[in-house]
Structures are given as C-alpha cells and as structure tokens.
Image 1 (cartoon, rainbow, N blue to C red):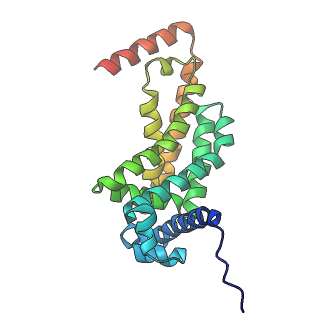
Image 2: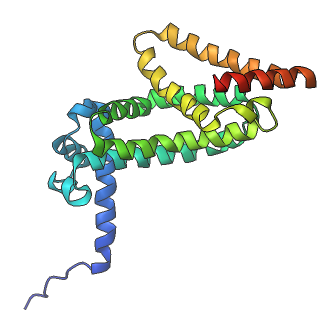
Image 3: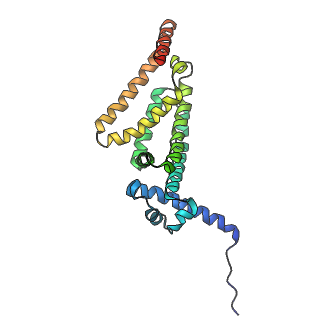
Length: 225
C-alpha cells in the first residue's frame, strides 16, 4: 500500500501568506512604473507578481488599498535608507544637497514618478488619499526633524512654521520631478534658487545682536500681516 500524502505543516501558512502579500506589493510598484496609475489594475499587478488576481482583493480588499500599502512600504524603506544621511546634516545647504542626491537617485529608479502619479490620482480618490497622506508624511517628518536641529537658536526658528516649511520642501521635490519633465533647465534653476535661500538664511544667523533683533521683529510683523 502506498503511503498517504503528507500535507504541509499548518505553521507554514502564515509564511506563505506573507510571501504572497509581499509579491503583490512588489507587483503593484512594478505595475505603476510600467503602466502608470491608470494602468495599475488587479490584472497587471497580479501578472507582475506572478499571482492570481483574486488574491489582490483577498489580501488587500481593493486595488487602491494595495497601491497605497505598496507606496507606503517603499517609502518607509527609502526613508530608512537615507536616515544616516539626514542625521549627518548640519546646515540647510547640506539638507538641500541630500535632497538633490535623493531626488536624482529616486528619479532614476522611478520612485519619484510613482509617488507623483499616485498623489495625482489621490486628488479624486479618497480611498487612496488617506494612505498617500500618511506616506508623504514620512518624508516630511524626516525633513522637519532636520530643520528643527539645524535651525535651533536661529531667529528664523522662533517665528517660522517649521512643520509647514518641511511640507514645502518635501512637496517641492515631488513637484520638481513633474516640472523637470517639461523644463529640465527650469528645474535646475529652481534647485539653485533654494540653495541661494539657504545661504541667505545662514548669513542672517551670522548677523550681530542688533541686526538679529530687527530681523526678528520684521519677520514677526510679516507673519501677522
């Protein structure tokens, strides 16, 4: 008599599910890069993942939720990858240089394009908007931590909306990716202008006590107008 077929131990099931979910997350990013957000469907994602498209809905509920989860995971990984660079920043100019390097690398890998496309799609899709807000906030939080450190003791820090400034910087680099697509020279000019602004802020910090008080007063008045 032949031996009965042996089933796999049940404890392997969570591992299988985790592997399938990860393949779907990776497949979602591949589909976004290859087909854009409008072409990232359950079919194209499943094809990229080598899985049945029904598993998209089984594991994530909808394509939008899968896309949001994929973008968040990818961003978490990239933020962690650049954490040491951010931690070593000691000035605004250094922060902008990290931003330039990050922008170039992420653009080459297609990550900025994926983020920009998904943000655009989220404008009219609330199910996608919430996870994308959370995803975008990962970069913003990292930049805000650096700003608070490098601006500590500066008259700018006393009156500036640092969280708002962090959002402005992080959104600028996403927007520049779209702008550079039609005007590369203009995109470079915009980055150069940010560098000049960083130098100006550093010069302000080197002003004497009297000039610093005047500057602080002017900034406060401007903020109230």
